[in-house]
Image 1 (cartoon, helix red, strand yellow):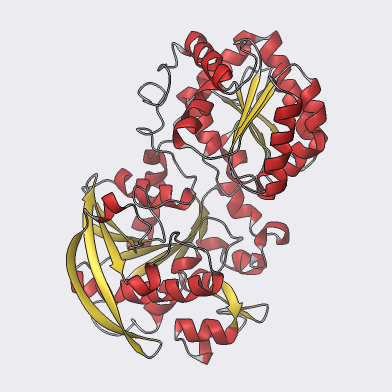
Image 2 (cartoon, rainbow, N blue to C red):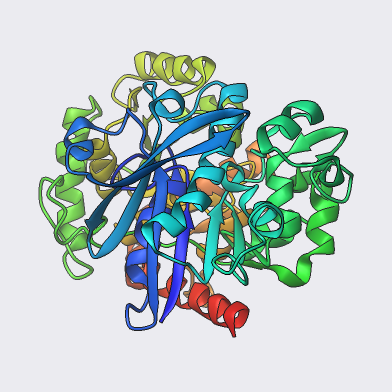
Length: 480
């Protein structure tokens, strides 16, 4: 039995702001329990819903010296779906109505979390063979395992893995500040260690000292070796390319299942989608203020409304999109300019465009089921989960060929009758528009080919089981 500890700043079902939480909460459940005991440790935020916090059980507490003060470290636990979760408690650090917000404060908070997590392991009596660290918030753990925690029998030989979920976020501040929060010596603040462009960089520490590095798709693993995607760390990524691998995220096939989804007006399978998706579409068209016509080509977006998601491309050709015989629905919040863009078009093209400028988990499920196509023209996308959900719900993805989008959506080939979606290569608005129009043409003029594409997408396996096998292979390789 090999012991694995996931260290993360968020995990479902307790706290979620993005895809990291899905990985930290869903992947451990998919490991082979006969060979791997995988547990998860995260902060006990006060913004975790009260009902969930009330179920946590006290384990122990101790005091730890950090930044010259004696700090309280509480340890709580709960078992969910067979996985043991541990929570590091300190109300000074983990109060507030959200897990992140103030960059400077977050740097100190998560450095404390790294120290407290490692210090808590002997107290709870769980010695991991490998600590799997997620994103910059846990970046100094691989460093500490080689430094402050290297001595002593308990920590000797513990391996570390660093997973990059989004290289854009690195935990950067001036060297004196990062030196103070990490409590590391001058030795570590050189360009081959934690220093990057004369600043201190927490993620870089993890990437230099971890025994292996993963990121969330094969294509993104290649992209981050070049300056355009490398966010200043492309040289390091090239230097460590033999320790770097891309493993595509999965989705929770229990939560995202059109056959059992309680949020849908009706359920459907790969056999019944032809009639039932049309009925769901008609019902949602009425709710969203669109013209009720189940034959009309309906494109959906459910996303943070930011530049990263390629919304500037949509802004550029939105007039052209609206002149076409199609409907468009968007669900999400984000940058004010994009919220206003979709609100304005919703008013101007009433019955054709619907702007749902809020976020609702229930409505997101309904959008994936109701739409014919799902648009994801991202500037960069390390993995992306939306296209995987769309495939599962029989909604054909239209994506840009970047990161995980390129790895998971096979472009339609009308001559060979293959593919699960439509894609375009360049970050270009008119290339995107032409791809949308090609998808629309297939939908209206060759519905049988469209339905075969839907069927292939719904049968594809992007469950966590496939991803878990690749992580298990890596763990076995590291641990011998």
